Image (cartoon, rainbow, N blue to C red; front, side, top):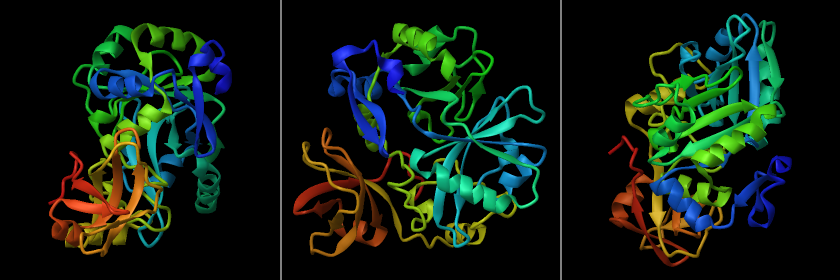
Length: 353
């Protein structure tokens, strides 16, 4: 990734995400956060994991494993889904995008967390058995950009004037050029758009993007993600531990209760229909300038542990936490992290009482 930013000079600072290099900011992380929240900007997601499935049985193969209707993925529609343990615990979440127009049917590209790709490849190979499916690590072939903010539709209209993007629903997908895909994030509208492009198109596309949108680094994106309570695998969803509905898989359009069997279906369906989920994802707001490590405990006023921090941002003072519903009700709006009072509220997208 770093080779694409040689022209940025001293204003570009770097950090790491999941031990991979990402632009931290382009000179002013506060301004970049304001752009993401109030106007629009683009963020580089090219370090994310990308795995392709192809072959005559790849749709049926993946459809029997994951929480959503894989057969609904098409050139005009992308989807969000997850793969669970047999006990219904989270393992991976991913966006599914149709790609490879020369294939019939087109292949599927799974976009997921970068540090979980080797384990995902191993798990898919374990389930494949005799299925006619090819599984390929595609991380070196594509760049991935996020186009995010309240005014992003107007900017995209100027960037791709031939596409009818206005009013597009989450998951709506377009092909601006051969080999490229543009889709509105299938989870929620506030999470913006994603643009997938071959690496050899990066330089020319960056020039077009800069003319239409300013860049934002990873520091600003994390602050924006936490403010909008966008859950992330490895943070809000902890492998082998979190029940996916606890952190919003249903509200993120990632599960279909009308589909056939998949790994972990029994637990997921039972907890949903019986209403037995005891903890949920909440946002906490406290003093700016402090960031809490993931796993830091959150306490009620009487000292009882109510849950734990999953993500935190020192710039805004906002954090995300998985909390026991009963303890949130008992606290009446205020919890504590290491004696600091924190205002607790539900994410705007929360569909539960």
